[in-house]
Amino acid sequence: HARVLSNRRVTDPSHFQDVRLMKFDIAGSGIEYSAGDVVMIEPRNSLESVQQFCQLLRLDPHSMFFLKPYDSATPLPARLPQPCTVQYMVERHLDINGVPRRSFFELLSHFSVDEMEQEKLKEFSSAKGQEELYSYCNRPRRTTLEVLFDFPHTTAIIPHDYLLDLIPEMRPRAFSIASSQQAHPDQLHILMAVVQYKTMLKKPRNGLCSNWLASLDPQQGEVRVPLWTKKGGLRFPTDAKTPAIMVGPGTGVAPFRAAIQERVAEGKQDNCLFFGSRGKSKDFFCQAEWEELTQKGCLTLFTAFSRDQENKIYVQHRIKENGPLLWDLLHNKCAFFYIAGNAKMMPTQVMDSLKSIFQSEGGLAVTEAEQLLRDLERAGRFQTETWS
Image (cartoon, rainbow, N blue to C red):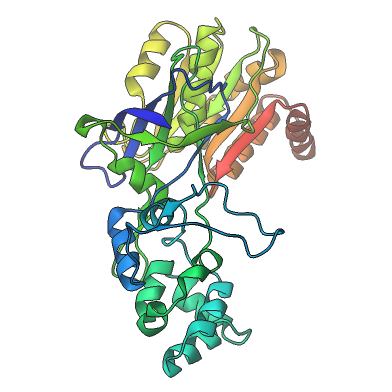
């Protein structure tokens, strides 16, 4: 469990999106990581949803229980202590804020004695009722807790022994590490967008882990978060002379903050960053850091702020504008090229810009430009880490 050192909002208060730079103390933990690695964080359900769940199911949050397996082939959940309180299980184990699957409705229908509720549950778990289930559950992102509210008679009589069969375990969430141990030996940083969006339901949908983390305030007293690290997909060049070109709009810049800190600490000067966001005054993450490194000659920075002028400018436009520089870095200096961020359109558009540079600067035909990109990818010199 790492202590939260700071939890700072890095977007302007007037900006629609809340993004946090969170710093954790990992001194004495034995945790080691390098640029490109990810941190896994175990989320927690809010106290409000834990209370609602316990009331609905008539559970005493303070009561203790022991778990016994049905048979020797069924392992007990590894992350639940023995004995365990109901509060601990609901807060840290049961995914009550996830969207339930078809099997949940099937099992629930077996417990139901209310005719109308049972009929609906059976419909949702039948092959014929899948479209109806999608409209009720998946499309609006209705949570397990909300479904239980909609079936009060059935919920009140769920046998408590079946809770772990009915509701899956919460999965840890992965975040790109946004710091280097060479710059911050006892710390680990993440750059995290707090997930909130609307569906047809009245209540906004909240990302479980990001909203829990955002709610933690180390100034109100010590807070600790269960975390561990994993090798990530991005690998950075070991040769000090090899340049790195990094394209990280929005929170996609997180792994590149780690890489730039690491490379600067190792004396690797040839760092080129393309950063994009909506507005220079709204969501220009780590602005002071980038500007300081630029002044020291450790970083070449290109920015694209999409809403700061009439026509929208994105990172792919800045890449196209800097064709000669990028061709020189890739063709003559064997640079590595990286993309990280939201997987909607950006990676494809950046790749298109790159291929057009291969044609305009390198004189390649369309097919040759596509082949060069494939060759770079095969050689590990073109890498992407995107999420949806």
